[in-house]
Length: 100
Length: 233
Image (cartoon, rainbow over all chains, first blue to last red; front, side):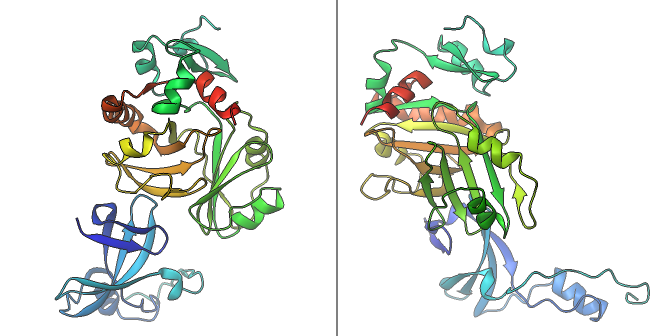
């Protein structure tokens, strides 16, 4: 059984975790182009190398980030999302002209 | 001792069919009927010292979550555990478990006293505090006894041996493939692991626990035995 270290709950069997996709910084949804927004929402880089990914410890519903080498499948470190997300993000409803 | 059957009570445990199969005797606890004992009332506490499981689903419990939850609870007089994944007994006998930096689980003592829980549930909601009423979403089972950790090693990946998993520690993990919260809060000198998990899967988890306990001669016991164990030093 592979093991993964949850920043909140410690080392656990990989079966307790759910993969949540690659992490990418979010573009401003009101100023970015539809193409860039679609890439952010739907597309993965699928890079061979070190990437940052979302993982969830399903027993506690705790989402966190992992730095992983996709070539060697080695997890370099896991860390709480609060390292990146320092404040709450509120979405502003776009005016009709914002989406084309 | 009440002659009532659980299907006549206002509230009943999701395990009531299992209890009826085991010829349980019931007693009133608030508006619910809980299992007082299955067999010899005098013998059950001794079984609990070795290995047993009890259904505490009808006992009061609640929860709160959100960035303001810990400070709000402290303002209400709750003594907070120092770190996530630890639990702390309160002066009134209830137990508060901190599941993350922003989440609390609060459960009653073994008598079902709900003073603190009622008080918190009836407070006006504060900014950044969200109610998680656990009584209808999470089952509550207690596994007691010196052989409990050995039994758990078959169905749970976390090492729950008493020298590794101290009194007051909390593990959020998988138990027989069911996600759950395990809180170690001993009954007197008897190790006790409280399990909170999805209420819709309670019968499955109960059956898995009894199956895993069989080789250690573990059995189901009622709340009378649990209270008796809690009263011993």
